[in-house]
Every structure is written in structure tokens, then in C-alpha cells.
Image 1 (cartoon, rainbow, N blue to C red):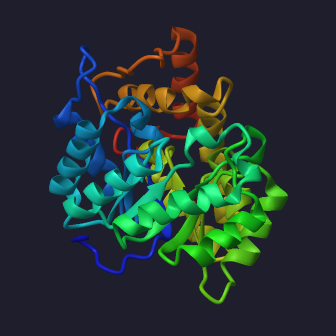
Image 2 (image 1 turned 135 degrees about the vertical axis):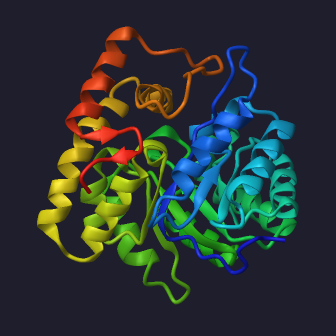
Length: 318
């Protein structure tokens, strides 16, 4: 049973990190603290666990369940929890969805199966069947994770429309199309359908530009470090206060440049290191194949945090 019945995904939604011990086991105490640091920021509308940011690719079923359960124990009565559904097989995805519903998640973030990478875009029925299997396991609201088309895992515009018709529990997309023209088309079309679909941008490397197109929310791993700045930017854009939005964006810019530099896959690795530099967690351990960043990169992160005036308890001077 969801803790927040009839939850509608919108607003500012951080995706949290997974804090690990030196032996790569889960540091539950520090993970809980980090979760609360993000989830309880004024203006945050929900929080996501078991996503890219929490290294879901390297966590087994039991670990994912434990992450969700402890997250619900920590903040579940105060903020909705969105649980990632990351699986190559549709039957396994449905099993994860049923678990999330049973434990008390308020919504699901459904990743595209990597098994569709080699031509799945030519078979839209594959995506539809995947989502139908998940929706058959629970009636929780679903956020469809839209990837860039160039990587082979993005859904075509037409496939997304078919998905929305076939699976009414899809309430939003997490838009990582990485195509500004297509992103704006998603926003203008999906949010004005007879059954509107919220566009949650995850274009955190160009967040202000994305939000000015009209996205009704954001779901971002960078929120694990700067949730307060993201809330401030979202509010300023929604209020039409361009000067304030630009001033906030000036503070986000250095960190976005550091987080999303090549190789892109190190983004959440860098976010962990930023939390250590800020004194919010004790260590930045990652599970392979991810590897720790260099001392040189760590110094760049330190400079970016200083440039953005980001301190231990959040952005200063908001």
C-alpha cells in the first residue's frame, strides 16, 4: 500500500546516492542520513531510490528491497518514495514492481531494458509489453524513463504516445532525450494531452534552459548534492523571474560542468566525492566497474563547490 495514495509525479525530485563501506557493503546509517538530507529539503516533492544514482545496476534484488524498506523507514511518512525498476527482463521488472508496491513505494521509475538496445526501437510492441507486465503487477503510478534515441534505448515519439494509451498508469516521463528540439515537443504535447503526462526533465547539464521550456518537474541525480538550488531554480522559472533564475543558474553552472564532464558515466561517482568534500558523508566508495576519480578531478570538484558557494548544509545565501 503506497504511503501517499494518488501521488502525481511533479516538482523537484532528487535521485539519491548509495553510500558504501570500504568492503562495498551498504552503509545503511550514512545512506539514511544522505536520504534525509535530500528528501527533507523545503520544496522537494518526492525522492527516488534504486535509480542510476544509487548504482542500481550493481545491486541485487534483496539489496534493492532493503534500500527501499530503510528509505521508507527514514522518510516514508514525510515524502513520497519513487522506486526504480531496472531489469533487462520484463518478468523480473514485474517482480520488482510488485515488491515496491508491497513495501509502500508511491510510484515507479521504469528504465528501458538494455536487451532492447539492438533494434528495439523498430519493435514498439516490445516496449508496450514490458510496461504492461509491470502495470499488471501493480497500479502504482509509473514514470517512463526516456533515453536518448542515439543510444538505441530511447522510445520514438510515436511509441511514447502508444505507451500512454496502452498503459494508463503511466503518469510522467523522465526526459533524458538529450535533444532540445524533441524535449520541447515532449513538453508541449504530452503535458496537454487529454490525460496529461508530466515531463520531468533530467537534463541537469542544461537545467535552466530545459525548465524554461515548461517542464512541470525535474528528477535529477544532481539533487543528491544541490536539491535546494534546484528547488530555488524551479520556483524562479515557474514565477517568471528571469533575473533570479539566471543568478541561481550561475551558481549551478560550475558544478554541472564538473559533474557531467566526460566520461559521463562518472557523474554519480563525482557526486559522492562532492558529498565527502562537503562533509555530508564520510567516504566515496563505488562498486566496480565504476572506479574512484583522480585527485585532479577531486580538486576540480572542490573548485566548483567553492564557485557555487555550496556548503555543508546546502547552498549558501539563497
